[in-house]
Length: 469
Image (cartoon, rainbow, N blue to C red):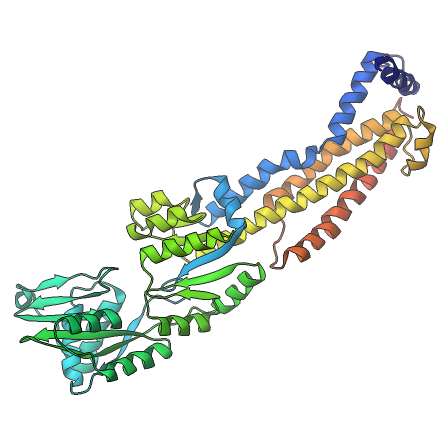
């Protein structure tokens, strides 16, 4: 077998030397080695192998340019395969500066009573919503802010994800404001009755897309609901178009909010998200992520609090805000230095572009190698196997010219493709079949045509070199 294998190569070696000056001619094993190395260099898929690192580095660089730090290249790749996007409503889908727009008192309660209680319950609330309630009570009802001495004995009740309400206890009086179900349950637990009219007020505000906060109090052993605070929020401009784009990418968008289902549905319909999770707790987020993953989808989400850490750790792409807690940043695999939750959409687009670029250049590389087979092998072995001459469509000048042309082209094409690998192939939303067709037409067909043209052009130039004609 060894003799049979070497004999054609020896004949080929003699043929190669026929056109080379004696000063550089090689014979026997020397030429055989050159031929084998040349074939390996030209015919193995070196193009994509040389560009994979550049594609990955470019993807991470595009994230850095947007002030996002990825803990690993795998996180960037996972972003490109994301199938479900979890987005917080406040600050991501809406402007996040909900403002008090109206105090709607319950039956038998004056607007001034409701305004005074709402302001009192919000004095220690440093959120934008809490500040807006204090300001609105002052501007619309002329209520002055309490002085520090008046609140010396006040016991402030902070908002938590479990209680979903906040307020104050002072002078035998308890005042609470928060989610409708939480406050009305608190009133009932203290012996009061949540009137049916309050439920209608809450539903009306929720159906309009506003956020209702119910205010209740316990004083003199009597518990009652005072009314509802109407908070207004605005969906960011262009969000519906962005979500339509996500849908064309095959990504399912889910809005996460602590609002009641009616408010959540109104905002979700206006923004154009596919689904929503209302009155969400940290446990609900974690359960939703696991459910999506069990269905075979990769999940991306943002978070900033310690309560978000389990969900960030569970998500395939967890983007922690730089202003968030250490636990959140350690749990996620990306950190957004600008703490902008909407950037999650851009991260997914960058991941998609990375995968599309890799797919496009892989298609080009495979087609490029196929074209080189047809360009080199017939020209090199036609002297040994005359039947191959029918495949020599390029009509290269000589076997040695075919080798040299292919080696030179192989080196040039890798360098020429580096800018494309770094810049990335432009990604336009579409289905998988559409993207595959585009890759085959542009990079598949291009991968076949370019080597034929390039190798033939180099072959023509080589013919003019001294000693090669």
